[in-house]
Length: 119
Image (cartoon, rainbow, N blue to C red; front, side, top):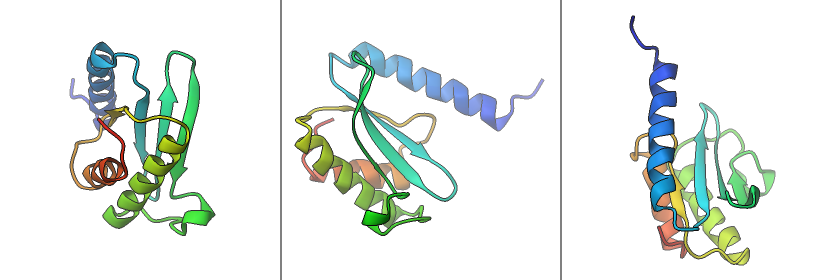
């Protein structure tokens, strides 16, 4: 039986998250979600189950509503770095989900690193 794209994506996502849990060392998780029209990212404290900071192209204040390209991902990365540092978070680990570290995800990560987040 052939695996569907969704099954393979879920398998990749679980594999990435389980590997990251082993090296988390108490750091919050920066989780990325990408859809066809938007991109969003959250900094989550898994120990308490709380979202510490979030940024998305759905926010009208960022002026990126409905955009899902590399430039939008870079602006979201800069915004999440600023918000996470305001919340007192300096180090995170990147949970890219089942997405490849390429294109939009890489642009978001590079912008977050440039904004002062360490991972």
